[in-house]
Image 1 (cartoon, helix red, strand yellow):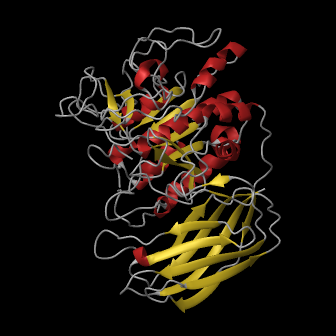
Image 2 (cartoon, one colour; image 1 turned 90 degrees about the horizontal axis):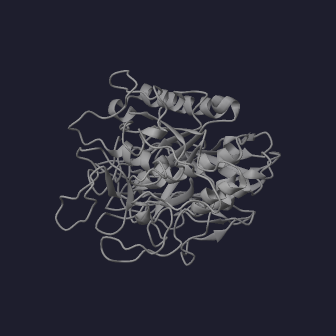
Image 3 (tube, helix red, strand yellow; image 1 turned 90 degrees about the vertical axis):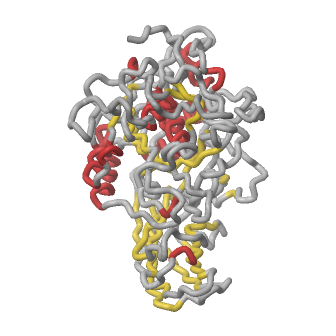
Length: 522
């Protein structure tokens, strides 16, 4: 999502080559690295004078310092596509890592996605710096994977359905990771379905990307958790696709960023900060252009060098942190499939904010939280696991029969309707994800409905929808809406599963028509 301290969400939101390895790692020469708490949190002060919490970061420095093993460790050889509003490909801190001639401009059909001079489209440039700003060049900042290779696609400047689908597959088979810090408008409370051609493109990427190992799609969970219309990441048909890694945001204290959306589909979290008057993310900005740098704003401190900013935030900022970590994972083990990467991220995530009441241990022993998924991404642990990881077996899919209810949902009622599916014969002993298709197409205000899925065997609940306001007079109805959940990772699919549907507000009424489950796992 675009920097929410500025304009709100987007769409709907020659460098000296130095040796990166040796002895016990490097001493960073990137002058602004000292401010990058998301890489190494030493208790840096925010603009409000409050110190960050030491250690609340992505734990990436040990990976860089592992170069002394003789392995490359900075993302070398891994290509990341930044699908956004553009990328300044000749920026002094990005140019060394940009693949020559392989970016794409959806306005001109050319190979330079740099936004035109005089525009404020700086979002993609900021995202790119978080992923792979060059290290050890005595300039600016450092990326999570500071030697990874990048291409930029400015799809958001011409955001048609066909272009969004094209951007998911462009550059095959050489794009390893696709970073998507965008989504529908935040803070509406409305459902936002993905297009059929986009879903087809994602599925093709999972099957054919990386020469059959699958492209890794990393997606912003969304910034709509503040205001009257509270969003959930499961209302976004892009972010809740089972083939993407949905990323939530945490602040410099390791707790949920105020804007970050909850969701049963959230896999992991990463540093995104709060707002520039407190503490956000330092990264690249448009060169000598208006961008994220707000040094001229009264009362807010930003860098005098306006090629950089300390004011990038949002799940937009958290998502490229994860994309950079994925690049390090793939470099450590290029044979990983897309499902393996997800499994490694979930298994190695760090449990943050331990006093948060939403934490529970699922039936397979994993700590899970609707706010954080499996926790904050842990680069060192993930890369360590990746090096010795044995790939998952062939994916098993079980589509359970449709259950038709066609019963009225009691209005403003705390009990609601409970429907149970007895699932047998799946041969899935370890779930990876679940899709839940739900219909109440005649209920005019979906924001009234609270929907939960419960594994009766383990007692683990996935909150799919929460009562919330919706923008406008009505909300889109749940008409074969597909929710997703990763909270049952490692649990068995066979057994009783319960869907509970409650109408928790007065006036609007409707019918619980039908639901079904699709299980994915091994």
